[in-house]
Image (cartoon, rainbow, N blue to C red; front, side, top):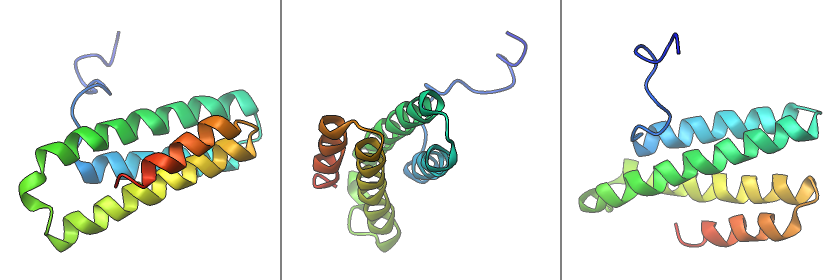
Length: 106
C-alpha cells in the first residue's frame, strides 16, 4: 500500500475529540449522499469512529468532571442519536434504535 507508512491506520487509537470530529464528518456526508450503499458505508465508519471515542473516553476517566470533557461526551451522545436517526431514515429501524439507546450511556 502506497500510503501505509504515511497515513496512520484507522485502527490507531483516536482521542475523544478526534473520534467526535471524524464521526461528524462521516454523518454529515452520509446525510448528503443520495446513494444508499455509500450512505451505509459512511454510517458504518461513523459507528467505528464512535467506538474509538468510547475507548478514548475510558482512558480519560480522571477528567470526567472537566467541562471540555463533558462537552465532548455530550457531543458523542448527540452523534449516536444522529446516527440512529439517519439509520431509521434509511429504513434500518432496529439498528437506529440501538444507536439511540447507546446515546443514553453517555
